[in-house]
Amino acid sequence: MAHKIFFSIIPFIIVTLCLFAIASLTILRAGLAFGVIQAGLGYNTILWLSILAPILIIITMVLGRRIHSKLISVTNLIGVLWLPFLMYFFFGAVILSVIYNLKIRLGYEINMTTLSWIVISLSTAAIIYGIVNATFIRITKRTVESKALSKNWQGKNIVLVSDLHIGTVRGAHFMQKVVKKINSLNPGMVIIAGDIIDGPVFDYEKGLSPLKNLKSTHGIFYTPGNHEQYNLEPGKWMSILKSLITPLVDSRIEVNGTQIIGLDYSMEKGDATRDRLKKTGYIKENPSIIILHDPKNVPALREDNPSLIVSGHTHAGQFFPITILVKSMYKKLTYGLTKVGETTNITSSGVGTSTSPLRIGTNPEIVLIQIK
Image (cartoon, rainbow, N blue to C red; front, side, top):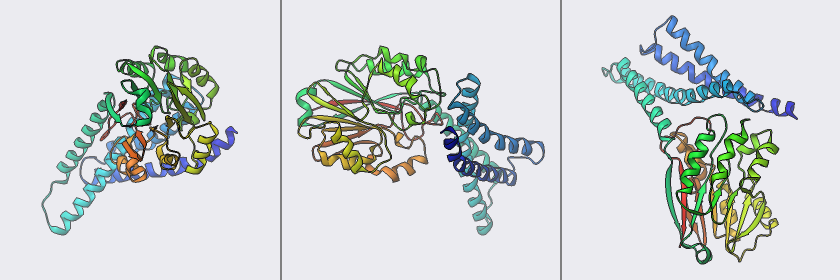
């Protein structure tokens, strides 16, 4: 099985390395042409770093699926911090090339070296801001008007958190910070909507143990996301979680007069998700909250008239320009509150980060849901 998984990702690795190579060469050629990189030692040093960095990222990602070590974690962190620089510098190089060609055609006098340094400075400042911004967790309040839920939940705080991505980049300290923030909201119920772990092997007991300090009147409920499926040791981390919180995996539980249903992450279409919902024993006429990590099948579930659906997964795009791509895919379901009929959906931008630990144009959040 391991050999099959390895060989199945070879095409992805090859394509990724090719994209990295194209971006790196574009940056190097622009830097050389516009005078910010000098030929000789400087150019060769940057060239070799550009070759080694993506290889190190892929090696640490592959090794991290089976081995937990400080060296792998630090090396991976350096690599994933390099990725946004590569992206922003690549876009900068493309923009500079367009400006240069316009300059030649229109005969404008523009100092391309000065302009290049401005682009480099702005890109670097944006990334530093993104890294810092990702550490400041916001509390986002969402008011849900629901006749079905108001009888049992009015005056009680429901806290939604998703996409913690505990693993090589974020660990126990981050988890403690999240738990402290949630407890400060005096939650009546806590919902964790997937991707509590990032995928690679880590010290599960240490990373997840802060959950034991989480306080909630009516319980803490968790449904896995896609990143849990990347992990090769589900028995180890799931056994720890079961001792701390209540996992709901294609299952239903009655809480405070409300059915809470957790639907496991799947790439399936909406009709298949509806079938899984029915198999949990879902009662259409009763108040309900559905935990669905990926909001793509929310429109299909609305046909079953749930009171509230909570999701994560999208990160609202996490950082520009990926925000544009994600919004084009998920549209209104990308982030925030949407309502159709008696069904409300809330998509959280998540509290953690995936791959690169930065946020530009989005914020890490814990959602405070109040029912009216």
